[in-house]
Amino acid sequence: MSFVTGLRCRECGAESPVAPVHVCDVCFGPYEVVYDYQAMRRVLSREAIERRPRNLWRYRELLPIEGEPAIGLHSGFTPLVRADRLARALGVRELWVKDDSVNHPTFSYKDRVVSVAISKAIEFGFDTVSCASTGNLANSVSAHAARAGLDCFIFIPHDLEQGKVIGSTIYGPRAVAVRGNYDDVNRLCSEIADKYGWAFVNINVRPYYTEGAKTYGFEIAEQLGWRLPKHIVVPTAGGTILPKVAKAFHEFQHLGLVEGDFKIYSAQATGCAPVVTAIHQQTDLIVPVKPKTIAKSIAIGNPADGFYVLKAVRESGGWGESATDEEIVQAIQLLARTEGIFTEPAGGTTVAVTKKLIEQGRIPRDESIVISVTGNGYKTLEAVTGTVESPFEIPARLADFDELFARLRGNRHVSAG
Amino acid sequence: MAQVRIPTPLRKFTAGADAVSAQGSSVAAVVDQLDKQFPGIKSRICDEAGEVRRFVNIFVNGEDIRFQQQLGTPVKDGDEVSIVPAIAGGH
Image 1 (cartoon, rainbow over the protein chains, first blue to last red):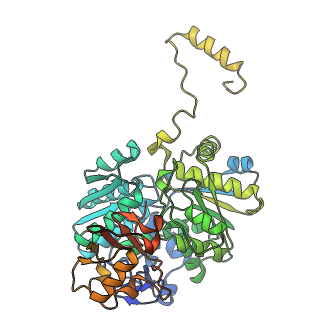
Image 2 (cartoon, chains in turn blue, orange):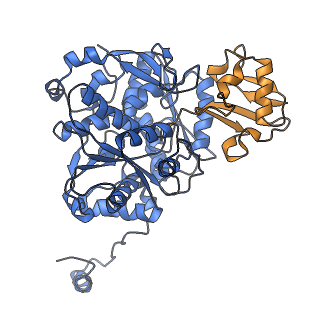
């Protein structure tokens, strides 16, 4: 059974029945799903959740579908990794990495939102799903559409990394590369969504889609042993995940599943930091920018939910910082070499920003910290190519290896003993 | 005349039309002219202070007016003005 009672505009409070609509008729504000928490409180407990399968649907009362989920039965419940070696490198006591680089089936947090969006699209009776994407979302929509047997159109900027293009087209969608940046693709898709009767996961089914992002926060709280982290750093692109992680923590508090408070921090690339700039300038006005960064998956210059990121950060007492491309690449390597986790530039941004916030004293060294890793580095090899050591090439002879080894042992940067 | 693309939430003003023509040498003038043809539409696009609402984006020939001269952005004959809800996107 469902606890959804309808949709409500976050700005003016206008209400709507459940339907594939995303903006309020009156003020263009975003619709948000409304739940009956009173009724939910009677059935939802830590024990009830713990008995369920380890996927994102274990929190289904807090997700906006009516019947049984159609897809995503293996998505979510990714590892929360205790990161002691990275903690030592950053000089902090308790550090965790929530690792969605291994989410099923397409290795990013998008498998959460898409599982919910496509399950909902099927309930609405759509036969075609679509999205505007910088890559990860298109990968996930393509894979889930294939498994659900739906037609699929994806729209991407023309200059994406090869891994992210093939990572979609392998599943057989119609892929359209648009000459322009993500914001151009997004504008075009808003117009296409208006004209064609498709479920655009991040446009007309967006109120349901964004709810899926809460599961990232639910899992963190559950995996920490039903407590909230004191500090959590989350990357910001369009601004979906950060406010939804805050909402997840608030819902768990409201339902009596966790206690305590948290501070939430936004991480952006310096080459595309409209939200962090607004945090620093203490204004509500987010001035859009033309992105210029290697962190393409978070290169959104005109963030739809940027305002709600500001709100969530401020309400929690958090802050925001940005990282340069060089700092992002260093942070990708730092995470790989301390924790064995290879993330894409968005994750590098989050690690680099966490480091900065600790050095600035914004995040204290003796409280629990979670770093949000939302995507996988194997998709964006271009970002680090040329920054890591190339293999040593030798003939297939022991003498040649002996010679190489002796040479490497003399080099104190290489440990081969 | 400029061609103005009308998003779904505003089509109740335009009798369902997804594109209409409007005269004006700037975005502000085009919006004023739209309001003469379709009374009430301006109050959905602009707030009480006359500024474009937070959740509305306007483009002239595909270029966001916030990168140009906001409501003062010039509009020429044959230009395409798009009014698009801001809430969209993921990545």
